[in-house]
Amino acid sequence: MRDRNYFGAMMVETGMADAMISGLTRKYGAPIKPALDVIGVQDGVGRVAGLYMMITKKGPYFFADTTMTENPTAQQLADIAVLTANTIKSFNITPRIAMLSFSNFGSAEGETPRKMQEATKILHKNYPGLVVDGDIQANFAVNNELLKEQFPFSTLIDKDVNTFIFPNLAAGNIAYKLLQELGGAEAIGPVLMGLKKPVHILQLGSSVREIVNMITIAVVDAQNKK
Image (cartoon, rainbow, N blue to C red; front, side, top):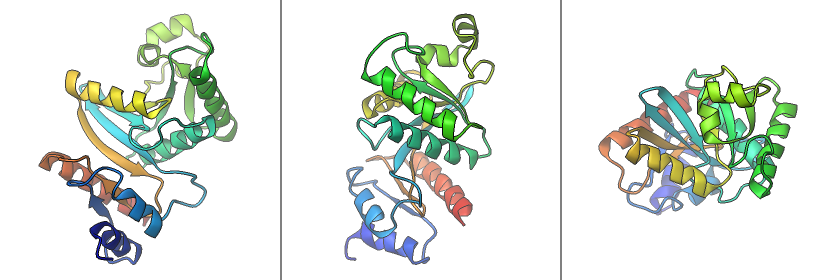
């Protein structure tokens, strides 16, 4: 209990605090183990995942997983998509999800297209109300006319995709950082999804604005969980 992260997690677990924010001066993984040990994951959830909300001129876009699972399986990708969708719904936004790959609906072979296809099948079967499709390349996911012209069968046509599930951690992390630095988007996150109670981890050296944004996310998370 002399470790600040265990102490903070215990305050949340016992109800003395509604949420915990950590990570400003530590490596990203340091506060996560205490949160898992003390609070644990939600019932029916196999893992935690990280989500970034990218604020652009066209509105918010959601990227996952950007912080946790290096090379998820198809089932894990489906779990990440469901976690992400539920988190987005808590912001009163309807998630419309593209399962990203370097191919379109089986146009290329490989481990990545196969697992994105399988994850999409799992989601279609178990969550029929969820707007999701893949495997799909990023440009087709965001260009409705191109998608309609080449793949008129896609369930994403005319849906204004706002959520992107990446095949691995490298792809998600690289994508959000490039959009942040080159595209001028504001990155809010990472939002830690899947824990029973609100714990969110800052990136090392976050700015005051980034800390305030994360606290706002934590407040919404605490209100929804209660």
